[in-house]
Length: 149
Image (cartoon, rainbow, N blue to C red; front, side, top):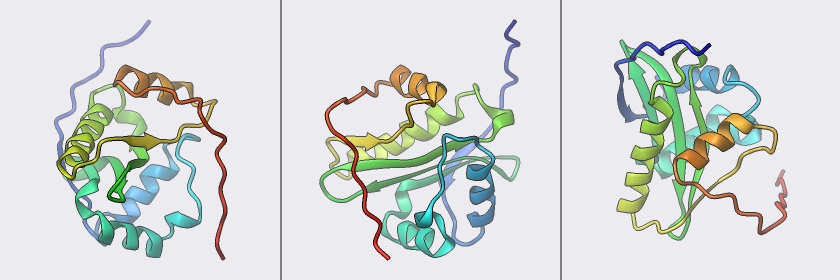
């Protein structure tokens, strides 16, 4: 039986460096296996990202606490969504949808016409979430990566 979710009052705002750093890192770490942190998630790398696209790094805040975050990017051609996460105790209440909707609005305002995001195959919850919000599976490529030391 599914219980009715309690409404959470929240507002969205841009990530603040350095005040939000540790709470957002903690949020990502406790969000489950869907958010996979790596070498690009050190404070120094997050700082560089935030400096490049400060308006595309958003948090959801309730009663002074960060309860959701999404980091987006735009390179002038394509957008990319990184690390959407909502506090496990606040899920199923529209926070993730609100973060994504605001990020999409901001990407469109920059002229972005296409955006991508990555989801692991086993993250069925995230896959269902994104599909409900108009994202389409693209079985077009093999993903290749290369780390630079």
